[in-house]
Length: 77
Image (cartoon, rainbow, N blue to C red; front, side, top):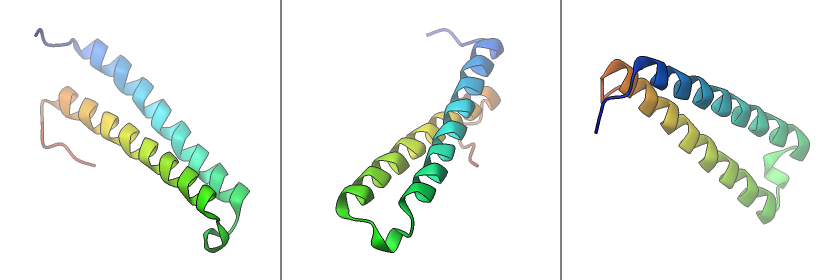
């Protein structure tokens, strides 16, 4: 497998950061729209958990791209 160019990694990283940021905005909006978490029903909780799972996947994608860009498999943030 050939190593990707810096430009390819940067392009993917920018897209991943924009996606991650958008998902975090979605979580903020979700919280504002659904009020106090103590009063959420099971469906609202499940929807929020799915959103959080998607955010975690997105964050991991950003982390992996940063690790690739820096050639540091232990990169964390």
